[in-house]
Amino acid sequence: MRILTALFLFLTTPLAAFASGDVTSFTLRNGLEVVVIEDNRAPVVTHMLWYRVGAADEEPGKSGIAHFLEHLLFKGTKNNPSGEFSKVVAANGGSENAFTSYDYTGYFQRVASDRLELMMSFEADRMRGLVLTEEDVITERNVVLEERNSRTENNPGALFSEQRLAALYMNHPYGIPIIGWKHEIEKLNREDAYEFYQKFYAPNNAILIVAGDVDPSEVLRLAKRHYGRLSPTKGLKKRERPTEPPQLAPRRLSFSDPRVSQPYVIRTYLAPERNPGDQKTAAALTMLAQVLGGAGLSSVFGQELELKQKIALHTSSFYDGLSLDKSGFGMVVVPVEGVSLQEEEEAMDAVLADFLETGPDPELLKRLKAQVRASEIYARDSARGMARRYGEALTSGLTIQDVEDWGDIVQSVTAEDIVAAANLVLNKNSSVTGWLMRSQEGEDN
Image (cartoon, rainbow, N blue to C red):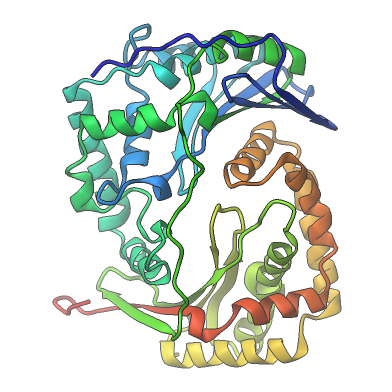
């Protein structure tokens, strides 16, 4: 099958424009969103192209195809042979990479500002012009299988994580590994790759983010020249995925392997994600994660289990609301030698129960808010980090305004908000508790 890049007529004026501070946004006639983040402190630019498609958008039985296609996009087009794009980036002193998540796939280059148009010409070319041979597909499929072997099959913690996610998401595709199940990766072929590519790699399913020493009007002009002529995918529907049924009882699993160096207890809960215009609960959960275990020894778990009781080597809690669908909230406790996982779990539950009664310490909350505010300020020092911040948010269903409002919403979170969020999410009937254990050679998992 051959991909033909069709011309698409567009107007000289974008359909829509949005500007706020140093962030400007346009939408081209073919549906491509363009976001420009000005940062003139150094003559460099980050060019990022984000697609609103990830592992959670794959057809049943085709797990891993989104990540597989990410690999294949570094093959050639009719205009540029395989490897040419990477050679040009390197020859111009730049760097590049790509990434796949559940909700997005992204490609970026960091180069001198005067090389921006060169990056656009290559990236636009492979948006619609990818050419694949059978040899390309077989080679990269083997590369992906080896990646899975090294990162997952040979890592008991990664295998354990896959099983836990499959238990937390019984119906939603977030329960399927991004890299894919091994037996399904082995069957992915050229037709699968082209079908996925033709449907989702289109201007009306992409967001171009340019961050650095640039002028928004010039970025728009270049985007029109290189991306504006590409044809959109007709009839591309809004993403709709299966939802989780109500969880009525706690779920538990244990995984043992002789390669485990450090056993631990981990519990995860389904949790609300950040939604456009409605980020208050997610902000409260963000601060809850910081208070419970996100700030090391200063956190509740660190103070009680590591410092006071001295029964834990490490404690943490985590939450990331940047997802299109329901996210997860979790906590981890690593016991000291001689303390069983059962004892550690019971101690964790006791601390958690006490916290739900008393709430966060006001001084701790104040300090953590200051740290979060500082991290927000420091993050602005990285143009690439800012581009990623907006890209992750926009491909997860949020708006530019939501990104800009987020810091103030987090700062407005009260102790009462945190306790309410904890009571909403930390319900054992909605949890998955896992034990990772070290087994003796020859024992079953």
